[in-house]
Picture 1 (cartoon, one colour):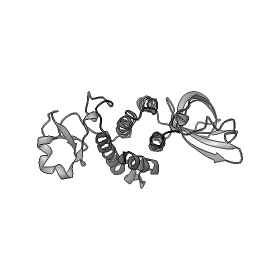
Picture 2 (cartoon, one colour):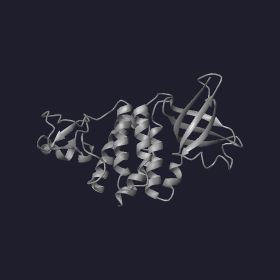
Picture 3 (spheres, one colour):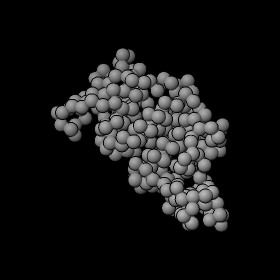
Picture 4 (cartoon, helix red, strand yellow):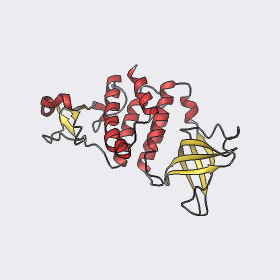
Length: 242
């Protein structure tokens, strides 16, 4: 059995003296691993970097086997982020969280969003807000999407500034006022029709990161006995110091 696809490298770990086990988030085959012969060599090292966009060929006798993988570099996003500590932290956070996806389960829409975010790593005014949107898309693909289109209490879509930590639904300013201390902040750039770009403040980004982290912790990580990945913790701390 064999297939060819494109993917984003999520992790690389040594195997034996010269090989490496590479984990990819592929377009049509989902999260998939494979053994790369000579993966620890100087020749392959520039390609086998977390976050890089690659073409992949996988071969195995049975579908459930680890299989052998050969990779060719498309875009070196790792090199792009290397000179910017925040961008590198963002890249590592994204790849760490993508490993929460079920193995070999395709998520083509999230894959496209992932490439879109990676393409803006050289623009610090844009990628942090895009990354928040990516985390909410990840929640959706894992079955825990938030409902931010109308107020949970009134059904209106005016002045949505809170999110209920229990339901994951938006709440308007007036309906949420009596409970404001118990609600999560909803930054405007996450509302339908709003763009993640100009006008998004550092405070907006931090509110977005706190929002997505809360639901990742409560709905995805804690039920699995996991904690927030260290790269995600480090990224939020770095952005909070801006």
